[in-house]
Length: 216
Image 1 (cartoon, helix red, strand yellow):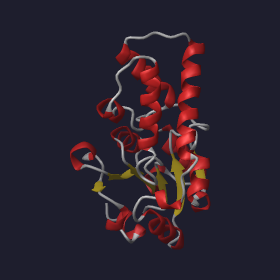
Image 2 (spheres, one colour):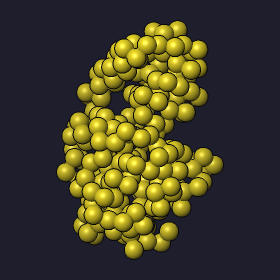
Image 3 (cartoon, one colour):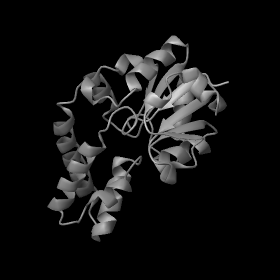
Image 4 (cartoon, one colour):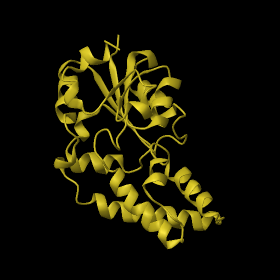
């Protein structure tokens, strides 16, 4: 039986991907590297470090570690400028109700995200208290599809992996959930996320958390 739910942040709880895109594109432009929506899709679910490495590879650039750190810090500063204005209206459809129902039904809830800004984002949208555990980029080092972030989330909830269901919007996140021995419901397109146990377009499609995760 599923007793715990693990949620990615970007694209599942809120759509901060648009802000990451703006910040990465601004950084890439400063380095004279082309960065469009196609490239941005390839950064979903992976860490800031790996994202930078991919962008530099696309641009054929090699930077010293100090320069890499500078650009990661600069990108994050631009991203923080974007998210500073976020509020509860940015919560994706059905998410707040689903989290409240899950809590009422006795399910444990954790966040499993590569973001290092997860806590301030959850604070701004008023959902920090909805989670029993937060596992983010300040806690783990391995990027998805490595299952570390979800396995640590399960551990902090006191549950075995097979007792957990992951909610993800990225292919790397789905692979991480499966690698960790967990069930997975993906939010997005079936042609991309088809390896998940179920694919939904929004949380409005699954009003009953316990029923949804135990019918997989």
